[in-house]
Amino acid sequence: MIKLIVDNNEIEVEEGMTVLQACLDNEIYIPNLCYLKEMDNPPGSCRLCLVEIDGYNQPITSCTVKVEEGMVVRSNTEHIRKLQRTAFELLLSVHHVDCKNCPANRKCELQRIAKFLHFGLKLKRLEPLDREIKVEGDHPFLEYVPNRCVLCGRCVFVCKKKNGQAMLSFAKKGFDTVISFFGEDNSARVSCEECYACAEICPVGALLVKNSKRSAHQRLAKNNNSQRPRPSGRGLKKGNNSLAASIPTLPGGALKGGGK
Ligand code: SF4
Ligand code: SF4
Ligand code: FES
Image 1: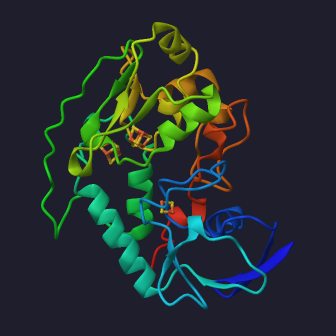
Image 2: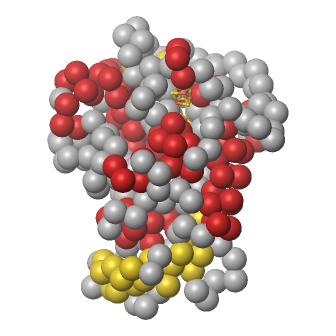
């Protein structure tokens, strides 16, 4: 076991764990979007999970650093909150906020992070970038809404993890980047009908189960209430969908005003 100090509290965790996971497991919430517990090499792309660590000369993404004995971590300084809010604001600048008409409303990670950071979902400093994105290729069972996608990559990861190969992937570049379903192999798509892992893991309302117009979170809730992300404790109760169960969620206390 490894002992480290986070925000002046000593915690003890297993060797090999990321700093982010160590914090989440100890009820210390750090905003995150592109991380899942099962990832061996988290992409570190959303930049929400920045922390200060003694010995590092600048803030670093806590999902990409492994715990070390005696490490001293600060997750809640003014500077860190400012950086997290800036990263969040950049994410929002490419996200079309329309919560009333979104199937993810009230289950959305952006709403939870906004509440934690005391940061509104309406942009103040930046102009929203209206991306006119055409989605190429239709999928028989899934609907992709590009202007809600925060490009976290969770869907690509879980698809590959669950099915051995990813049936969806990032396509294009820069502001045009989207998630694309590729391949015309219908046999692969038939397995989508029995899977929906990508839609279940999506932290926003960007991947939907087609025709139902319900998000996969709502579908999950209907099928098995115990598997849904819940805004308390250490995330999900372990159901038979271990990938959905790995979604890091906010502790209940943090929702009431954890961010500085
Ligand atoms: S994804 Fe979340 S923040 Fe965006 S419109 Fe839907 S509920 Fe609102
Ligand atoms: S579709 Fe959802 S899970 Fe996939 S990259 Fe976009 S926001 Fe992330
Ligand atoms: S969760 Fe660490 S960079 Fe996204």
